[in-house]
Image 1 (spheres, one colour):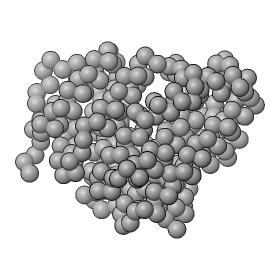
Image 2 (cartoon, one colour):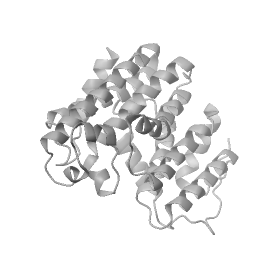
Image 3 (cartoon, one colour):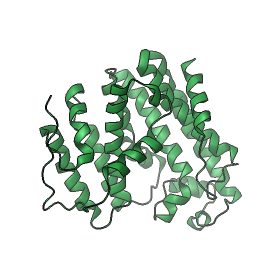
Length: 288
């Protein structure tokens, strides 16, 4: 297979130096890649990293890029078309060419990730949990579907289980990042739940977490855990390296939720993070 060609970057709205391919892939491997996936065969690991590199690029353009982020996301969608033609403009997308060809991956999950970040540009509050869950179908579930495609394990039953896992993982990330999201002007905690627990937006602006916010997080963490419980049978339907990878995702989700619990749900002091040994141990529990 010939290497992907990179078209010239003339007339592109992408900032010339943001984000660099090294920065994107470094964050993809460090933030999103599960511990278990690091033990997969190099070729499979490379394909998974290509997927995470795309997801990380979308997030960085939607959250951190200077200038017109909507235009940048439009250009990224155009570059996705170039990926399928074998000629991406951005170097960070070059590895994705071989991945989409090898596994015949559809465009729709990639487009959904871009749509989620377009939504982030105009939506900063979610009135109900159902609205937030619908957002997760764009921002999280597509990654699981792409992973199943790379594992050659996609089926309607497995996709349904994967969607539960991915939504739970996205919720766990939101609950870890309440303070960071609030600093960006976004609140993912559903407004109906905040009202139920008597939480105001002002309660999210301090460095210490009020008791009513902690009570709300107890409720939200339990909700995410139930989704993980519903999706975890996916691990038993898989074998080989696929089972190892998915156990890593599920175990990482439980470890993240446990990290929030161990802080006493004090999410405003800083994002509660699970250690790599804790994630590895949780993944081993899922394998067993």
